[in-house]
Image 1: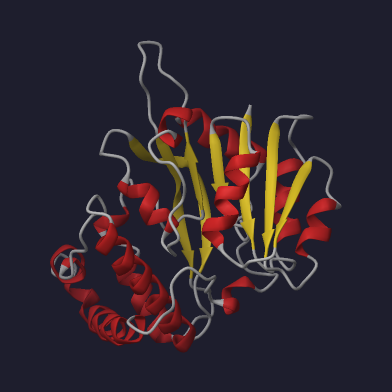
Image 2: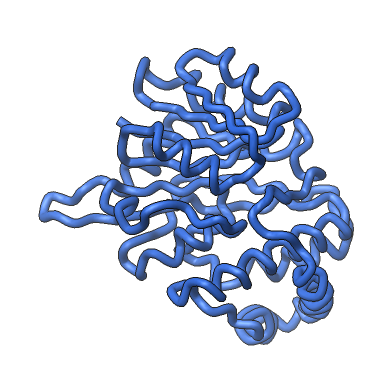
Amino acid sequence: MTSVVIAAHNEAAVLPRCLHRLLDDAAPGEFEVVVVANGCTDATAELARSIPGVQVLELVEASKSAALNAGDAAATRFPRIYLDADIPLSADEARKLAAATAPTPGGGGLLAAAPSRRLDTTGRPLLVRAYYAVNSRLPAFRDALFGRGAIVLSAAGRARFDQFPDQVADDLFLDSLFEVGEKREVNQVTTLVATPRLTRDLLRRLGRVRAGNTAMRATDTRVRRARRASWLVDVVLPRPWLLPAGVCYAALTIVAGISGRRASQGAWGRDESSRLPAEGAHR
């Protein structure tokens, strides 16, 4: 009996695909799906209500943290999957994620898990592809919970915190709660993460991520410190052919760091170019 919480802000273009992917092959009542439409000015809530088996809540404020907390308050089951509206996850894949946090016969078991990720850079400009050639190989993503668009928690894992903080980096927050051995990547499930279509969209995304991560680290000492030289030490030096991509990665990161100091916190901020209807499909 698994709950799925989806915080959705103006997701009419992608949410129906996400819900159909999850529910079309599910048994009746197998998943308790809670969609929290927050600050929407499109048909997100109406489209979600049109799909049988979906509970819809509406919030006036556009806030992912508020939406996640409202969804949590309404959800009643564990394991609990927090799913991004642009990440289609099939019923079978949701089952595999949930199973990863099932108690073991001797007691214990994983508290949190996330799928592996694959980055869609099809048709992207050279700088975007260069950035993700390095990013996709960073060791920080190994067995991490962030950057996948889906995270599952057991009841014991959810008990690690009270509410989602009013911060952008909700996945980094969850990742910080668990030690190695309490969380892992589920290799049997892979989400296809759409990358920005343009370099300027990438810079905006990186700026928001950097600002959110910085704010999270300033208020929570459990959040892992960023290894600024990891792109060079762990990725480029063992693979010298990636040096040109590494130079691009470093330059984009520096520019994004500057813009990230001006990014706002708390409110939704995202790359609309990667949320076109054809993007984010699961493969």
